[in-house]
Every structure is written in structure tokens, then in C-alpha cells.
Amino acid sequence: MDMDNNCEAGCLDPELLQLNEVSPLAIKSNPYVAEKLFEQWLSLPETTPLVKSLLNNAKAGVPLNVSGSTNSPKATSGSSIPSMFPAGSTPPLSPRSSSGSPRITKHRAGPSVLSSPLRLLSEPAKELIPQFYFQNGRPPPNEIKERCLFRSNQFFYGHVEGLQLNEFKPVTKEICKLPSFFSTALYRKIDVNGTGVTRDAFVDYWIHSNMLTKDIATQIFTILKQPDLRYLTHEDFKPILSELLASHPGLEFLQHTPEFQERYAETVIYRIFYYMNRAGNGRLTLRELKRGNLIAAMLHADEEEDINKVLRYFSYEHFYVIYCKFWELDTDHDFLIDKENLIRYGNHALTYRIVDRIFSQVPRKFTSKVEGKMGYEDFVYFILSEEDKSSEPSLEYWFKCIDLDGNGVLTRNEMQFFYEEQLHRMECMAQEPVLFEDILCQIVDMVGPKDEGYFTLADLKGSKLSGSVFNILFNLNKFMAYESRDPFLIRQERENPTLTEWDRFAHREYIRLSMEEDAEDASNGSADVWDESLEAPF
Image 1 (cartoon, rainbow, N blue to C red):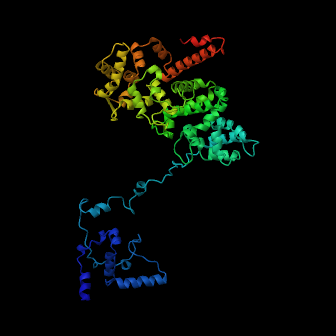
Image 2: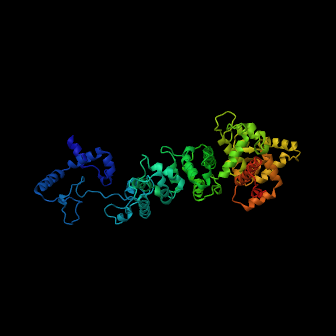
Image 3: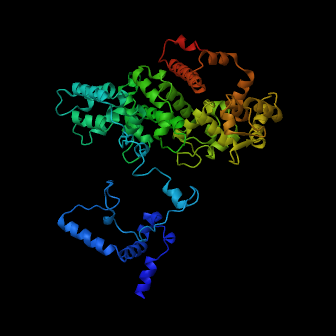
């Protein structure tokens, strides 16, 4: 039986084997095939003497000369590994097209490993890719780093135990290029143990942690925020505002009235979050900080001695107007106002329906925690929205009020609901009433919505006259002023195009309030001379 098997193996039809095309991958993935082929090779009659000859040569130290391992033409065929086919009976491979066998196609897909001269060109040279991600930010260039180290050595020279808080302000302003009222916050950030800021501690924080190469918004954000948070809260701004109140020459007169210092700081913080925190969640992110104008206002406040010229956020006159307007409405001075108080705002300018919507807390949830009462922070958001309806926070505030069903569009019925009370008030004041159909046509012309059947927030933000639309719906005094087109106000707008509606309102109100205060002092005998300069704007 064994002889029959051997005969069958020796007389195996070579066309069926195609050994030259057996894939190494196929043999590797199926060891059984390799094992059977090896057994078949061992059964050939030429294999045994060849193996013995190779072993003897290896013992005698004779170098092996195996076929396929030498290029010498003198290589003998006697030492070659025997074929499974009888000598001279190896059949030629059948001619195949390049598209016939998928195995051949795969084999010829790339250049030959041994013989192709294109191999070196097909493998691109390994180039070193420079590091592009740094966990703590990109390290500073050597030139900038050396310059900063040189300046640091100058400021810390002679202070072996480090600088104290009152000595650190020049470092904040000259080396870090930050507003000087960030001195305390930066000092506390570095001096975690309360032992003073040494030169090495400053260099480690500002240079080695790559604060030097960050933009100023990221630097300020990193200094102010709590270590475990990724946003800024109201509390994070209090340290810098305390230092601003203590050091700014324009706020020096408040140092003997700490209660007003506290109110000023609160008002500044509320204004910052009103304009900057567009999400309205009390969490100011780095992205929101970069998109706003707070950094520019901080730098301006640090350089400008007259704080009232810093119109964005920090003006004391603006705080004075907001606080006095709230105090006028808060008749019982419990620092809370209700609907009846708010309806008196602007000489009863607002309708009852819009006041109801405000107290339903649709545009913004109250922070007072008292049912039916608006706190000071809530009033700041209200007055900023009411007196500057051209700003995006204001448009969003009033859009939510008019959008009764909260579907994101203002319909004819919703606008008519609020205008009905305006129409009734005009009739009571013997004013010529304007029908809603005429008003609606006027609003469409003013806004130019994509679809005349309704108005979206995007439609209103795209029009410069959107603020007047809201005045038409619920503020009678401003509606009548818009209809009369006061030439004095038009001239003011042309003379100062950079001023916002809020800036103009705050300026007018501050003059009025200061004149009333001077008049009250004069009636009490505390002022003998009337300051005629206050009459100039009127």
C-alpha cells in the first residue's frame, strides 16, 4: 500500500501542483500544507543522499552551495535541492494574461523586492516631523525667553526671599503686560504658600508653564478661574475689582463709602455677564471671553485716569444711573421691586402686558429668590435691554417676551396682542390712533423679513431698526419720539456715531440726576452758587 502511495506521489501530475505559485501566506496560514509538501520531498529518492552529503560537508566545514543562493555560473547541479518532478520533466508554466489569475495580478502589483531598481524610489525617505502639540502650550522662542529672564532678574535683584504683594505690581505690568489691577490675583496664583513670590517661583509659573506665549485672554482666564473649573463665575472677578477700586485715581472718592464700592463692583460684573455670557448661565467660557471686548476695556481702564471715559463696563457714571434708577423705583428700599414699581419706569412708558411677561421670567429667570420680586441684578439686565434695543442681548430679551408660544417666530397675532394696549393708551391720551394693519406694514418695511408672514430673531438682528419695532409694541413714549423724529437726537447720533443708545441715555440721565441733586442741595442751603455749566446740554 505504501509503495502505491509513493508511486502516486512520484508520478503525480505536475500540472496539478503549480508549486511555483504557492503563496507563502497560504502556507503560513495552513501549516498542514507545508507539512505534507515537506513529507513528500523527503520521500523522493534523491533527498536522502543529498541530506547526508550536506551533513558531512557541514561537519567538515565545507561551505554550502545551495541552488538559488549563489550567482556563480560554475555551480554544480549535483548539489542542488532535488525537484519533486523527474529530471527534465518540469513543465513550462502555461501562458497567462495579466488579468487572468488574481494571484498573478496580486504578485505583480508592486515592484520586485530583489531585482527592481525602483524600490528605493518607491519608499519615501523618513523625515522628522516637528512636535506640534504641547500639553501646556508651545514653549517660548529662546529670544523672548531670554528677554523675559533678563527683565525678571532686574525686578527680583536684591530680593532673595522674594517680592511682597505691594512690590509685585511692576512685575504684573512691565513683564506680564497685564492690567496693574491684576497684581493681587496673579500674586496669589503664584504664592500658594503665602511666603512671597521668589524669582524662581515666578519664572516657573510664567515662563516654564508657557504662560508667556499664551494670548492675553487665555492668560487672564487662567489667572482668574478656579483650578477645578473651566469657566469664570461672578466671584472670580471680585479680587480684580477690589484692587481697581483701591488703586484707580478715578474711583478714589469711593474709598470712604464701602457700601457703594460693593454696589459698583456688582454692577460692573452684571454688565460684563450681560454682554459677554451669551449662554446666560453665569459661566463665562474662554471662547466667550475672546469674542467680547472685555480685555480691551480692562486695558483702557488701566491706562485712563478718568474712569468715566471707559464707557464699556467700568464707567462710574453708568453705575450711578443704574443704581439711582433702581433706587427711585424701590420705594420701600428693601432692594426688591415688584410689578407696580416697574410699571412706573420711564414715566409709565411700558405697558402692563410687557411687564407681566417680564415678571413671568420668560426672558430671564430672576435671581432674587423672592416670589413676584425683581432683584438688583435682574433690574440691571432689564434696564440695559430697555435702553439699548440695538444690542443682541436686548433683541434676544425682548424677542422672548413677544414670542408667547415660544416657537421661535413672532406672528401677526402675537404682535397685535401687545399693540392693542398701546392703541388703547393712545386713545386715552387723545393721540391719533394708528391701526395695527398700518403698523404691521411699517414693521415689515423696517425689518425686511425673509417671509412676510412672521419674524425670526435672525430677521431682527439683521435690521438696524429692530429696536424701534419693540418700542412700537410696548413703549409708548419711545414710539411717539420715533414718530416725531426729534432733530436734536438725530444730530447727536450723527455727531457721535460710536456711542450706543445706552451711552447716550446714561449721559442724559447722569446730567439730569446730578442737576436734581444740586437743586436739592441748594434748596437745603448747602449750595449757594448754581453751576451754570450743567444747563449747557439743555
